[in-house]
Length: 548
Image (cartoon, rainbow, N blue to C red; front, side, top):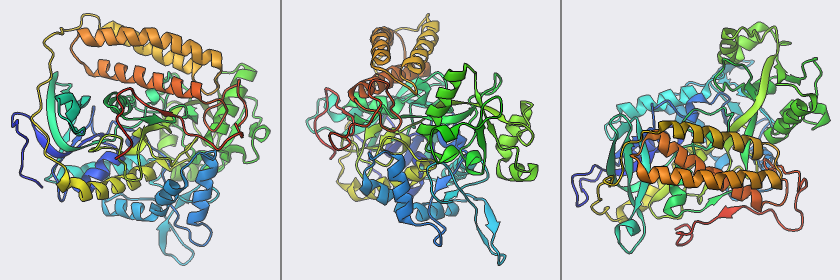
């Protein structure tokens, strides 16, 4: 750990500043902390992250007799609709077992089973898109087990500072300070409990803030998934890619008292059937893989059946399995549904699709580096090339772990050569006042999420995208004016992030003149086979060069 400090000692300094307390951020912090002083920012509570709510598991090849790395690679490439970076896929999949073993060393307990000779081994689930059982899990609450173990380890480490209720307002780069060579040197950070904005200096800044799925009216994600890291990087001058590929999970619990509760894909992996209200199965009309087809196919099938029949939801039925089987494999889902008077061992579960995962994001290389030197992006916030046009189930937590390790190795290699950050200025709020119109934020938030759901959802058209952009332009101007007049709050920061990522999603969707993976448009219902598959890359006006 370095003992140096930047020239302005009034402001806190850390060797590495990580925004995000999910699987990506905490695993990177723990890998670095034996050598460096690390701060981890959580927008709200440490557990308020997508990792904590992840049910299914982590994909990794452990059954060497029936499965293989090559099979996992092939399944990922197929699910990604020919848009995955094959080198990145191989890199990620090849580190699956090592990543699980690292988590076990951090205290994560995974579900096991007895072999025929009485030995213990990991129990493996199967999910959509996977040709074999390779989902390592902790019952049906894998993310919670991972999150709590990593938080415990981070709290116990003397070199890790955990800052809850701290939200990044803006990245600080040297060019903004009038210096010639551009690199990140810290961030302005809002303490939402005190309302004070800190200037925090760091040699390295890592964005691990998760996805942007709260840009939609219905989402399985926690409140924090407002695209903050993507918006921060875009404003700082980083390219983003493939934002049109927003994954909708096929099965979110449909109930007036349920708060966006996800029904894990593992329920279908263990034999759950999708049915209409009359009990009829329908996936045979869409894909030979039935309920185990990739998520984009299943979500569109459900969306089509709901619209065709004029119904509110469809149903997921696992009741043909025994109560003991269901309670053993899905204790969280069973208990949650039972609290809502749904006994899933006796009756089907009402479900609808909901926004679930951001497959695009900040463009990064194999070492998690962005376009700005010293700035890294890890996890759902990044576009690594792993997912292509559609994320395969349970590859996301694996990506968090693998690219945390990639970033760890690269940061260690580069750290000593990185100059100390310069003295940072204070945040200037001398020209703003307290808002007396907080209701405006709530109204704009609601309007944005509704037109994104209606016009930029599971099925799109040119006209719908045009209507969405027309509304966005007006909303963007209103929010920018509001931001310039009033003191910053967490709600305002989230709204500003959401309007930015909404624009990026719409712009990417308008550029793709085909239907591929998660992007389906009635105006271009087929693949564009006139050229090799292309990524949709957006470049900000202040971009200065390629990934360093």
